[in-house]
Length: 233
Image (tube, rainbow, N blue to C red; front, side, top):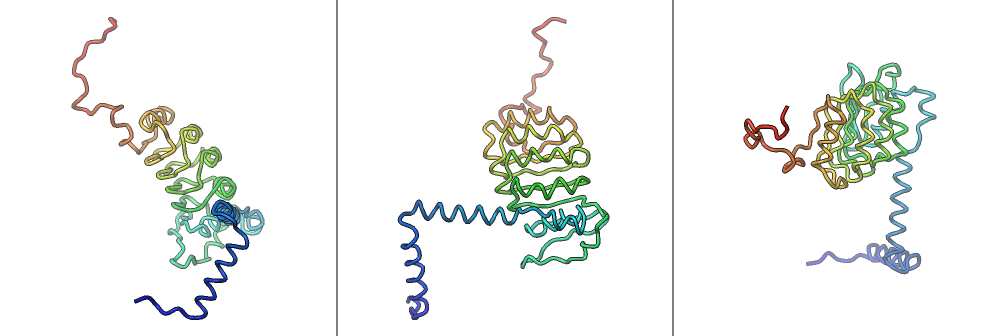
């Protein structure tokens, strides 16, 4: 049996339908309106924290930006700081003005190009960065990671839908990388070949995503044994 309809609930439904009919004449206008609202919300979440940086310094500023996004941070020689299920987090880190942030887990956060000004710029001692499954991280965002060239050792881009070969090419600055996860990138048109090129570009880095290279690399038992070279020495 369906739930009884109260006067308040029916009034709310009529109000919503009246609003939609007054402002949107077709589904395309409604979609554009919702898209604009989503963009505005994303821009607010990625606004500049320059005023906070003047008061608390770059390390606290970068950490606060990540925590407000729902991510986690680790200051040097400190424990990880994460928001709880309500998005609240302890504020003791505001006293860590001279303690560098060494690790950031921004997996699934809504960081975009605008918000990247709050990440690599103030956190130049960052060693670990996860941008896994970030829907707005694109090739332009990766172009800003060169600021971490002297410190960054581990980077995860797994599952980022807007990262393509062009963005991965920007990582050539990060010669101190030791581990890079580029698995599950749907915008990469030739994943196996791309991984091989990234491995050549970053020779000292372990590149994850080897399932992409199936068909391009032979298994050990498939390698030719003692095959003479067609070119004489």
